Length: 303
Image (cartoon, rainbow, N blue to C red; front, side, top):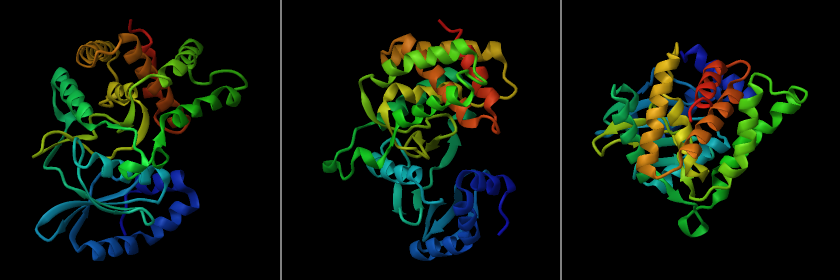
């Protein structure tokens, strides 16, 4: 099977030997899912990253087949799509948690929000999707529980590894920026309006459809919904970065979020800064961590 080398490297890096076995078995997994759901005309998308995703046909219907190495994040995505139930998100047609199979509604025309040029328009659209998407923290009565989802506090717990890694220092982060995030996180994470949210809410995960703008690929994260603005503020991922233009755009987005959501500027900036630091740490040292750090430096300058 001819798979992109970057996809193979991502699977090896993320899942080790388990990922290698999964890749070796991928043709059989595709065949299994195709037979189970009656799929034909399977065509992988061109930008495979950490899951095998393909366009397919089921009868007269266009669908998306998604296969991944079974893991907590993929299970959280399945459970989130079940609870979102097509409201603000693509529909989940069927899934198999044990094998890491998802059959998903194909959104048409499927243009990404990143393709729009007017950033004010993009931001207003994103806020509208956000507000339709969030769900109260699920309970057993909802057909699930919070244990089925990623906890935002666990993600940020990873930042506790920074100082031990660098003998008490802050590694790639300017000390003032890292200390600011350290001091603000307890208040941010203790915030009210804790919900089930997307968790990777940005312009490449918001697509046009006949039902309006909808999200794909939710992480299924439980935490204060202000975090949702973090990935949004970093994207679209523009390289090379025009720092002046990025700062003007960021300040404008903060104004729109404050006006539409009624949130304090300080908290919007705080979440953007915290996420950019977390994103940098996730990518350090082998990924594109410099971009996240540039964003953090600019967010730290906004008043």
